[in-house]
Every structure is written in structure tokens, then in C-alpha cells.
Amino acid sequence: VIQRTPDEATLQALLREVDSALDRVGAGTYGLCDACHEAIERDRLLADPLIRYCLDHLTTHERAALQRDLDLASELQRCLLPPKDLKVGAWETNYHYAPLGAVSGDYCDLYPAKEQLYFMLGDVSGKGVAASMRMTQLHALFRSLIGMSLPLAEIVEHINGFLCESGLSGQYATLVCGRAQAGGEVELFNAGHLPVIAVVQGKASLLESTGFPVGMFREASFVPVRVQLGGDDLLFLFTDGVSEAESGNGEYGVERIVNLLCEKTPCCAGEAVSACLEDLRAFVGSQPGMDDVTLLALRHAG
Image (cartoon, rainbow, N blue to C red; front, side, top):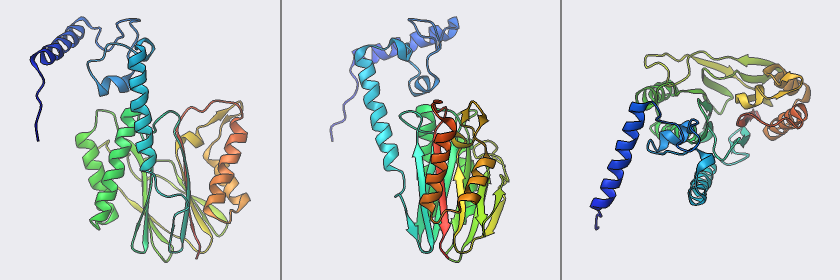
């Protein structure tokens, strides 16, 4: 293998860019666009600390290159999603994953392991490429740790430790992860996320968060919740792009989802997701979305 090293001219050009960035730090103008003097997008600055122009002032060539990168990132993220309508033993699943932009900071995954089904849903703080990169890390970490047959509590602790040690300041993730067993028993950890809705024998209960988001405190503890599901019982998970969606009548809200699931009594996981999406679209009408939207339903066939 022939390794190519940068030539002297390339290195000198890079050093000049670094010197220029340091000068801007000293002058208090670092992170501001050279053309309009407005703040450069934070995600882009994190990805390349030497950039000098905001999106509005990129050249045609730079815009095309950026669009190619975003398209590739979007495609890679879609490839990480689990199969739709996955069935494992008595468990059936369905989900809806809709990024607001090209990429998403929402995390959704399903992982069959023997007679068990692991499920994960979360929301990384921030937006754009930086959040989507964190989401990709979560995906890889969970799948690696599950493959090591670790208890779910240890997996959550490892994830939290990794995010605390390797994350940017202020970047964390709310997270629900669970292990659904063949007999209908579910072990579930909710780390700072919205409540999980459990519909058991037609009655809904909220499985609230029992800990801080992962990546916030290194010594945080995470407490499991256990719930037993029978035939046709349902777990329903969602991100705040659903519950905080707005119309002229205020926020969509968790209570509306609870009432919908109890009234509709969906006969399958896919019907639960479809019913919520239909109701959400009717609620927001023409109001533009403000966040990524992710829904995940697990139904125990009994």
C-alpha cells in the first residue's frame, strides 16, 4: 500500500487557515460568516472548525458538495433502521421514522436475540448532522453490547459512560430501551425520555422516566421498570416531535395519544402507528413540522 503524504503547498495552505481561525478567535469574530457576519451553523462549525461562510454564502460548487454529503448521510441513516413489521415469537412491531431535514437525531432500533426482542427509542439533544452522528454511535454501541449478552442494566450504564466521556458539552440523549421476553414480560429503562404508554386489557398506563438522560452524569443510576403484557396488549413509544407538535389549538400532547389508543383498540402494531399518524396530521393541518417524528409500537400476540 502506498501512503501519500500532503505536499508542502497543501500543508502551508492548511496552516494559513488555522492561523486565520486563531486570529478570528482573538478578534472575537470566530464562528461568524465572512460575508454577512451572522453566526455560522453550529453543526457545520463542529464538523469543520475552519469554515468561514454560512450556508447562505456558499459557492455553487460548495453547495453541491454539501448536498451530496447530506444525501449520503441520509441514505446511511435509513440503512440503519430495522425491518418494518418485524415479528419475533409472539411480538409484532411497527414504526414510523420521519426526519425533519435530511438527517435525524431520533434513534429507533429493534434487535432480535434468541427468543427475546430488544427495542430502543431515543432523541439526541441538538439538531442536524451532529445529532445524527450521535444517533449512529448509539446504534453501533447497543448492537455491540447486546451481542455480548450483557444484562440490560449494564448496557445502559456502558452507554451512559461512553457518552459522558466522549460527548460534547451539553450533548446527551433521552432514551428508552427494553427487553421483551417470550412470555410477555418486559424489562424497560426510561432515561429522561417521554413516558411509554402501556395498554393492558384496554386500559392505559404511563411508564414514566426513572432517571436522567444518558450522557449527562457519569455516576447516574438507572432503575428498571417491569411490566407484564398479555394477548393483544401494547407498548407505544414516541419522540417529542409527536407530543409537542403544535396547531392553533396548542400542543398535541401525551393525553391525546393515550385516549386514541384506548378508543381505537388497535388490532396490530401497524394499526396503532397508522392511527396516531392520521390523528396527528389532522391535528396539525397545514402547520409545518418543527421536529423529527418517530413512533414505535410493540404488540404481544399472546
